[in-house]
Length: 372
Image 1 (cartoon, one colour):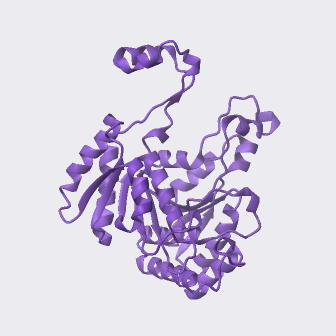
Image 2 (cartoon, rainbow, N blue to C red):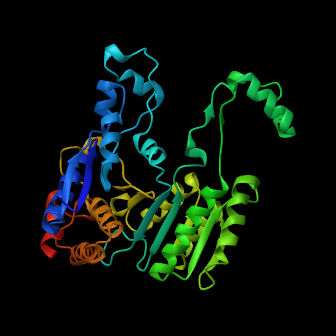
Image 3 (cartoon, rainbow, N blue to C red):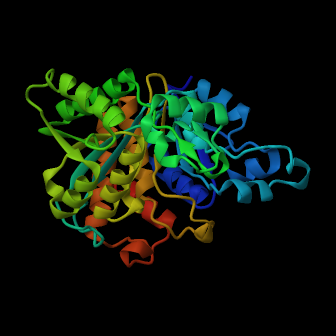
């Protein structure tokens, strides 16, 4: 019996391309693992009305972790229009599979490291090493939304908040409402995860990225809990910054920041900015981590215009494999993989088109495997 059981979910578009690249490296590593294919993505939405079939959820319940590559998402009306005819008009609504997996399996940590590899022509500057801890299950992405605004909910909001007076005279069908929900426990566990990581890997600071001067209640709760937890880690300094200012400071002085922690949407934004500073989403991986399951993925999309061409950079997918190895406790192998990636990038002999090279996705992966 294999030591690990790992689901492989290529998904859509270039997801299949980069998953094939990951398999080259996994074969070289020869991890003691059983790899289980699992269905996810746009074609299952079109054919079945469900991009995350129940059979995939059941498979994930039996696995230690999963590798997930890319997903296609489209707005509500476009998604319904692409359903097979017999499913149209049935009231089916497309829901993001990755968001659903985060919620179903309580994958509350979204870990996004972004490192500037030496010799990468796309680096903003050398020496960048940022790690974003993004709360993954709450905030604005929790999906508690309304349009039009229900009359009973509107009446209650008007009763509770005088600020609703600003919308007097606006018809309820002309109001859309998204709720930003934080819990104390949710704030505590994402902040603690950030401090634990900083403590383990020797980062001297944790920067909390929020907006408590305007979003007083939700961001305020996060700030208060972060200050309490910070007291338990006297050797790590807590920095606090507003998200808009942080975007400026990340560009001005990116080398000043190591571990950052934020809520769901703000963390999504600053981690994408961090990715661009080290070459773009082709170099950015993430881990969706809970107490019992973790799903690792590149942060890029499905790029359907490149699907099947084996043209895109597989580095983000290979770094997702590295994060998975770390999580499994295979830390020596994880470090060897990152070193192999770094050597291939620094030598510059095998580069995909985004780095002004002509290597294919699989050639880049093979070069990394050869270094291993």
